[in-house]
Image (cartoon, rainbow, N blue to C red; front, side, top):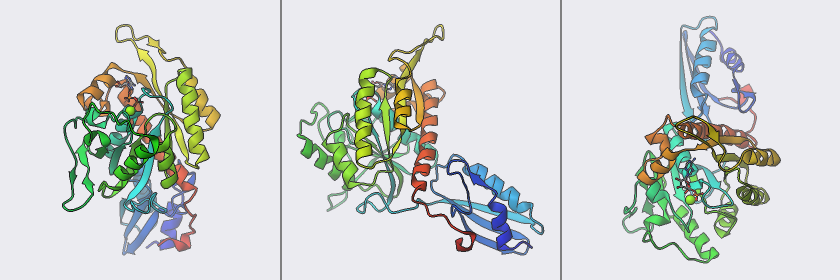
Length: 358
Ligand SMILES: Nc1ncnc2c1ncn2[C@@H]1O[C@H](COP(=O)(O)OP(=O)(O)O)[C@@H](O)[C@H]1O
Ligand SMILES: [Mg+2]
């Protein structure tokens, strides 16, 4: 029969490809139980959406099974985010991600919504806060026009709406659709903070914020009052968009918000007739920005007529047309975000010795 140390020794050969360490020193191995020839362990990852989850499970099973005296193996998988919550007032929300850009119309909402929906499909409990006070688009893009979140009885707390597996709130639900908020910056910021705090999000692995364009009071308040897990910069490769995206990234840096990476949206148009790729908004600008910021280029999302139709129809393209090249790029984006956010969080994960593994 193997000892607990032998089991841990075997598991310490498994490396997390993103974090660059073995799963034992990362503290992922929990509850090692050995009874007769039966070994049971639990692997606690930092996110339920971990793209290499099944690889870990399989490898752990194989490595334990290879130990002398082992007859059967059971590997249970669980997930728990390490570290303090991003906001004391929202203790059940594990990670808040902001999606922003300098310029309007570059596809922030399209990216934010598809990212959120995709995270949910990967197994994470996910919410979306449409924080674009001047042009809320979640109601239309998620097919929720005319709906309104209900308030909890006798409380100032709203129950978020649900669409495509995510919980959603937006000022767009609370205002008439033709009445864009013409608020001054500080009012807009306090409206968004209220919306964030007065929504009953429940337990969330990720809350995605769809920021308004630019570097205004909303971004400033959120970045100062929450510990964001990361900021996703969306841009096209057009120079005008790049310059503004650079400013948005600089704001995040200044406020100590880690930058997850850059998304090159509407990167090229593939002609449905001849297949030729035309870079409508130019080429290479987003990639150069990522290099300059020393962050990953997370995805190149091509210009797709289906993305427009999907947004207008209220069904995100990752749901309505998952085989479309833009949808595939968005799915890759979600994986890249999960991996990079785990890497960024790693800075605060203490390294464990095998003795301290419980
Ligand atoms: N990859 C894409 N391909 C085609 N159209 C896109 C793509 N990304 C966004 N769009 C469209 O561009 C417009 C602006 O996108 P939106 O996500 O609302 O931008 P923002 O939130 O930055 O203002 C929308 O009509 C949207 O459907
Ligand atoms: Mg928008």
